[in-house]
Length: 179
Image (cartoon, rainbow, N blue to C red):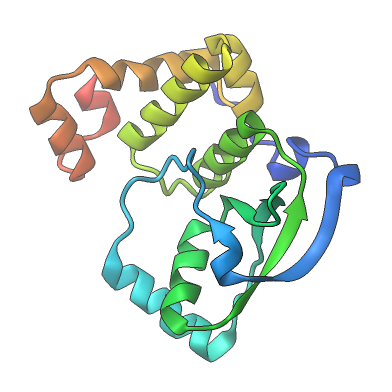
């Protein structure tokens, strides 16, 4: 069964909830507790920081403003971490209203679209959406633009032995071999 195309972040948050593009103080941003990515390579972050020093931030991060005036990061954690390394006081950000479920969905969709998450990070993010937000596998599949079979197969990775998980995370075997 083929995977459906992803609708993008715009499909998850209507434009009417946008507060727009702003320069947000870097120290007013809290990391996304629903970030599906669990590993941030320090050398890659330093490379990104160097690029930001030379060219600036080319794509704004996505945040939601909290009741206390701080900002909750939704997408763009690598950019935010790299800007912290540069010492820049602000970062361009799109400010939108978002529920915790929408925040997790957007973080997941952004990373899936780029294919940057390893299969285990993707599986853990799926499990978190299912458990914390009461979604069915079919509902999850529709929200992220994948088939239910693809979601089910990815979730199976959570039940493989630890040595298989390590080999998968290290890129020594494929997702298909791990299952």
